[in-house]
Image (cartoon, rainbow, N blue to C red; front, side, top):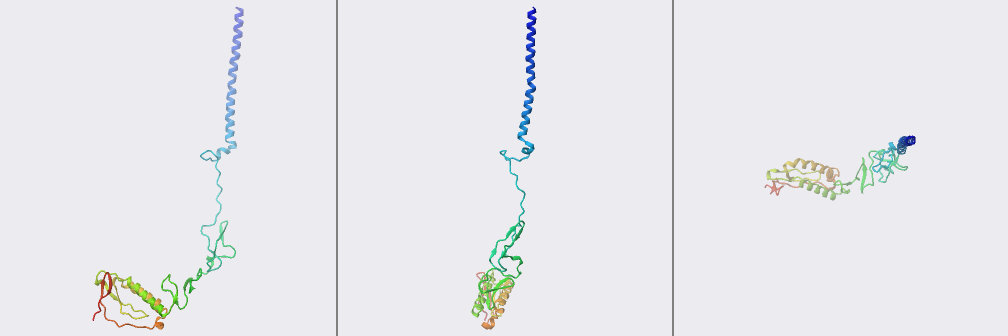
Length: 249
């Protein structure tokens, strides 16, 4: 019996030692887990830098764009080698300011009546525009200048009258037409059959033609002045255009 009690005492002591060892291991595991969390936190955000850095879709850190760099205005000055020259030079941007390179000037500093580019044939500069030189004339905006000779002036007058007449002849019936005076300082005429509704427009155009071709060029001195004999015309509408019918006896 005494041996049985001693055996049970040894068994109880062994169980107590085993149970204490198992219980002592738990705090070590918890400490290790906490240490792992701290290490992971330190690795992910050292000094908070990684947490603040922006990331791309794949998780890589983005480059922070640089601050805006000062720039020159969009509109650069027009630089030329001289006032009126057609030799242009590219402006230079320094910081926020445009400037013209050495040996060139800013066109904005030239006189306002400057004519730019190579002069067209037989033209001179007048108040900022190219015009025909003395004794020469230009019959339309894009036409070249020609000598204001009698033959050229007669051709210009005929062409001008033909254009004016064609643009003012529309009609629907005879009553739409009327005879309009068409004499100029170049020559007298018997009048032209035109649309009654367009008579004033024709008169305005004829006045401008008379001034340019006849008066400004002294047509009468170069070519003389004449007036044909006329009979009272009777205007009519033919094929939607005002024309003369047979003259009245």
